[in-house]
Image (tube, rainbow, N blue to C red; front, side):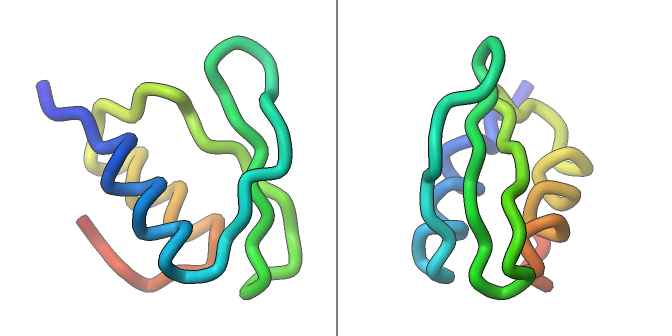
Length: 64
């Protein structure tokens, strides 16, 4: 199974999203200046659909 976590976090950082704090378990809270909201990022994203949903929450149109 593929691990998309690193790819997602790199895309978020390149598009101006910032790490805010650690959440529960292995989740992290990030801030998106595009949507002006906080959103969660799982510490181990294993499905492409989950990775794309995280990018969508950040307001990015990029697909993996």
